[in-house]
Length: 259
Image (cartoon, rainbow, N blue to C red):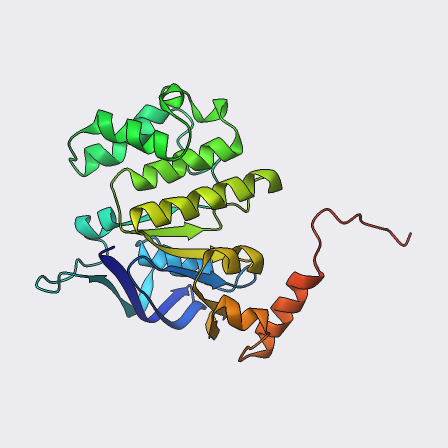
């Protein structure tokens, strides 16, 4: 556990629309940190800004390493990209449909000129519970859960210290979601990884994360812990409404029409 991340005054603007307005937070080494909010709240944009996929108008992103003798790697640098990896929401869109699993996992190793590709590919597949039998399959030959496991293996293969997780289970069936969340939690403990997990699902965030922030219309409106949520100790009305909506929602409840 050697690296964390600090975000200060992050501001992202698209064509005059303020997607994120001055977000700040700090994630310690080995910590699991959540960002929760409705669709359009700016939570996924924060992750994209951290990994250089969203235009950063203002703010600072700093990698916190245990060895303070060297300058921290800058966002966008090769070292930063190796230490900070991202798992995207859609396992159907994040994998190249014409590449085998072997090619998908080999590509980041080739880009970063990492030796021992055969060993790393085998290790990554084993860690996500698939094994070498999946190595030469194509994405269309895999289930949604298996595709997301490949996406996680791709993120792990460079041995990063921070994983950015953008709604990693929301595109999966409910029965598979728990399996992938348990896998992610197990990997974090074994590897000492720091997580920044984005989700609209309070239950997922409180299960996975030690601390969390609540986003609303691009602003951070609350910073709390799962214990705070359990006793409804919040700072903002929006958080209470989000909690009420989460409690009132029941998966699989039948829809009754008034017609």
